[in-house]
Image 1 (cartoon, rainbow, N blue to C red):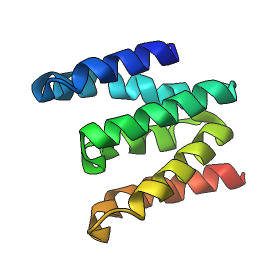
Image 2 (image 1 turned 120 degrees about the horizontal axis):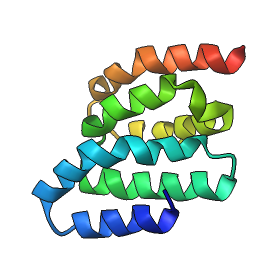
Image 3 (image 1 turned 180 degrees about the vertical axis):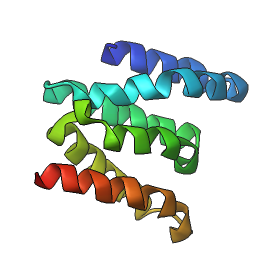
Length: 116
C-alpha cells in the first residue's frame, strides 16, 4: 500500500465517522503491516498516517490492531521499534493510564522478540 493511498483513505474518512469506522476495521491492519517495510520512508509515512488515525479515532479503538502488529514477526525489529516510539508518544498523552493496560502484555512479548 502506498503512502498516498493511506493519506487518501484518511482524507475521505475524515468527513464521515460511520465510514471511518467501517474502513478502520478493514484497512488499519493493512496500514500497520507497512511498518514491516524495509524502507524508512514508508515506515515514517505509516506513522504519520497513524497520527492522523488517532486524531480521527481514539487510540483505544486501535489497540486490537496494534497488539497484533506488535506480535507479528513480519513487522521486523525496526518496525516494532518505530511503533514503540510512536506508542510512547501517544500513551504519555492519555488522560487515564488504565487505557494503556491492554498494550502491556503484547508490548512485553514484543520486547522479548527484540532482545533475541
